[in-house]
Length: 269
Image 1 (spheres, one colour):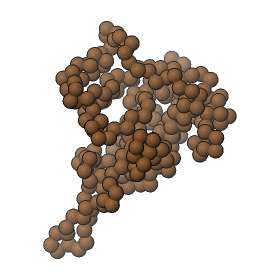
Image 2: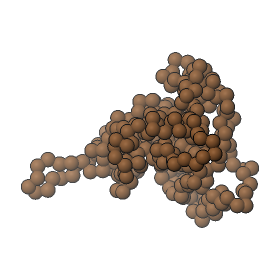
Image 3: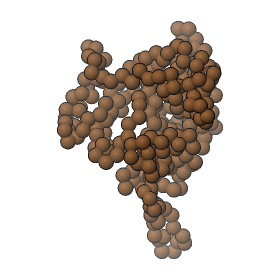
Image 4: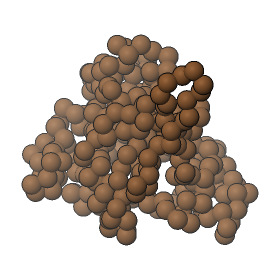
């Protein structure tokens, strides 16, 4: 959900946020836009990106929230340590959450420092080529042909999660210019059920663009992805950190020290 600061203000948006966040009594969702009427190709693309966010992007050397309190060895293969449990749930027995279900965020490219709210050249891993390609296509389609994807933040929202009201940088939303001043939030995660027959089309490659590197999702992988997404939301944010010709500023070395180091660049600088 999003609303313009100039037109409505934070108070009006906060009222909407509380309304949709509550669980009782049930809300009227008739005015909520539901992005579920796509074609088979659209659904195939969504399944591909979901699989990438769950299986590929959390892999090392990318960084995730689990690294904050677990060893790198324990978070080395989040998908591999979670897939079998999600693929074959025990009937009626409540099991401990898998690592995949504990995942809350993953950073790509220039890794965002949540404490200082900056990016630094000292904390960088290669940005995924497929996501860079998609981001470039979308940006060019809406009038930003020079966009260069350099940093990504993936957010994973479970049924007990929400994202509070904020201003910064479902389906694709390009936030640039005045749209950067939109309040947006995730008040609540609603359960849904992906199409049962989607995996069959994906496993045969029918949902992938012809000649595209975005290959289909196997039945085995879709069994995990479909179970996960029934009670979750995955959000991908892609940013260009440096403008054309811009570089990270150097910090002058203190007296008695040789060399220098680059300081961070804040989002929006």
